[in-house]
Length: 232
Image 1 (spheres, rainbow, N blue to C red):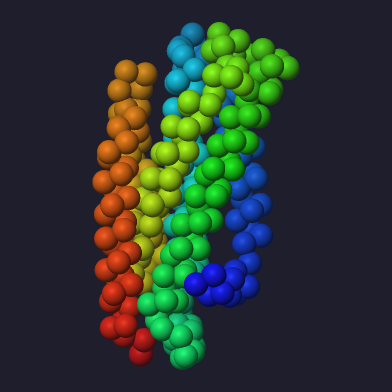
Image 2: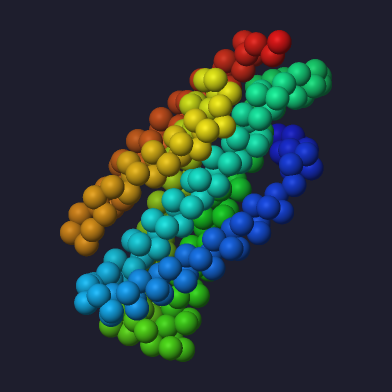
């Protein structure tokens, strides 16, 4: 399986993914800081507590990379069926299901890795900049206090990376890239609705966990049916 995943990486270089992730991290940190200044100008409290900051940063990170995952699905899976390049792919003496599993595992691994690294970078950068400039001193963000929050964020990242595979089902129905991207946006809207300081669906781990379970089922069905996909 590792060999098949390496072959996929050779076929589809991920330099764009790495560059996009770096840019996304910069934009997310900038947005989190900008919200502090907007808060001061408008007189509205965005981060009442440190938990609000961690929740907001987690939402931005997961939403960003759920979309990135949809783009990966489009490039590695949907485009091959849409453009009929899968004809060549499946002519190799390798089981179709193994090839599909390798693609999906690669997408999951890249998405989860990006979420984990981005969480560390975004939270660390915000705290570091706050130590220098003191724009969010009222949050009392310290290195010692972030570990429980980071553990919680990593757990949500794991579940979100699984949830990000749901668009495989919608994209494979008619080999549609737009359907893949739009379905990822719908997932983000569902999991992040009712955002606020008192209640948010993003705080309910069981909701994204249910979606992740649905994603596992969808992926299993997709892999099972790949042998019957018409490539003509």
